[in-house]
Image (tube, rainbow, N blue to C red):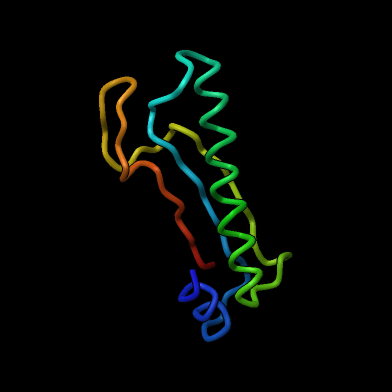
Length: 93
């Protein structure tokens, strides 16, 4: 995260997009689990945003999104724990 914060001050960056994701495992199956994972992905993105702000990035330059189980990095079967799908991506624009 510190590298992203530094890069945002050294390159011509106007926006930073922080996208949170989860795997498709959940404490609750079905829509309740999907809703939980959506919230979890937002909390992950928000946590990274807070760290970027602590590293000197202006809050109004950061957009956060939570995608929950959508867009897995590693395709899996249902209700599968996959650490690589539990991630946050930082995109500099």
